[in-house]
Amino acid sequence: MKRISVLTNPASGHGNAPHAAERAIARFQQRGIDVCEVVGTDAAHARRLVDEELARGTDALVVVGGDGIISVALQALALGTVPLGIIPAGTGNDHAREFGIPTGDPEAAADVVVDGRTETIDLGRIVDADGAVKWFGTVMAAGFDSLVSDRTNRMSWPHGRMRYNVAMVAELSKLRLLPFRLTFDDGPEIVTELTLAAFGNTRSYGGGMLICPGADPTDGLLDVTMVHSASRTKLIRLFPTVFKGTHVNLPEVTTKRAARIVVDSPGINAYADGDFACPLPVTVSAVPRALTLLCR
Image (cartoon, rainbow, N blue to C red; front, top):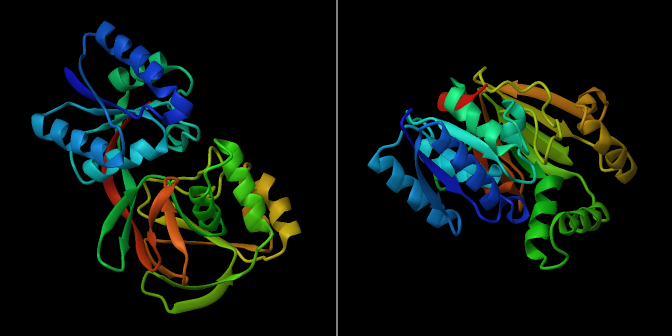
């Protein structure tokens, strides 16, 4: 590895990403790596910069930030040959957690990029009703989670994590079962009512919540976790168990595994890697060996 491109989201981690990038780049230069640094002001700008770097030629694209800026990179890297490196500097860092990339230590994460092995992993692919494609690395969620995210995105106050917490309380007050239609692979359509559905290429979302604790990003399948209860009390009690992954043992939770799922629920949006993806209906699938990752 001689030349790498480093993409930074300056807003990641409440503004901590630029400092993390500075430290990582210094380590790369100490290790004799030629670095081209690019800073995206928004997702569209970042994508243009990534495309330009890939066209110019680079040995790796290294992302400094959280899962949102990694998602931008995935749209360009999916099914290609340029590997992805990660310097975690976000609030959730679920990609980094999954692959054992050090958080809070940009120099150690940079060493993983230089010294680490490459692993070819699956990605999730979302195809919406118009045929548009969005790639994701961790989890696609729909239902209560996405309603909370919708509300969070509409709010201008408070700031940071507290805004999400306020949105969650507001949505809990309106908690209800939502009508879903799901088709797993070539099976029959299932009509059911769910609080939420999560489709995991990896195990966690939301900063370590093991919503799909059995997910394996190398098996060519998505793990699906479905919650069936509209009880506020049960959902509040379920919440802490998600951090251990033991919620899948509760009677109000069911799981399935499939390579391809068609999912619809009227008026519900899908979120992937923590960001808005598109409205349902979608076809979501696991695409084997879609990304090369630099990891331990």
